[in-house]
Length: 114
Image (cartoon, rainbow, N blue to C red; front, side, top):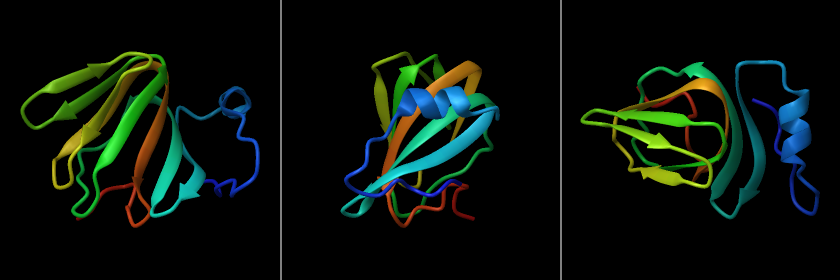
């Protein structure tokens, strides 16, 4: 994962998206108090996982995000968000390039907890 930008710096999401050549990437944008704000550029699917101690917010900027939970699939379109509570098994999928902001505790393991 790329280093976060830090404070008092302009974060240009459009530039980050344009320069990215990978199908799946997370970039730490900023740490604010006890939370991390990440940019996700998704195409494909991530593995099932959970976070034992942290909730996780997904907010779609562009594209369409499918958020699979144990009992349902939530579809998020641009300008829509959803918070996955801690300890809930989930995975993300995107059939097309999808740009997402994520907010979660700074103690989170982005790959999920065992």
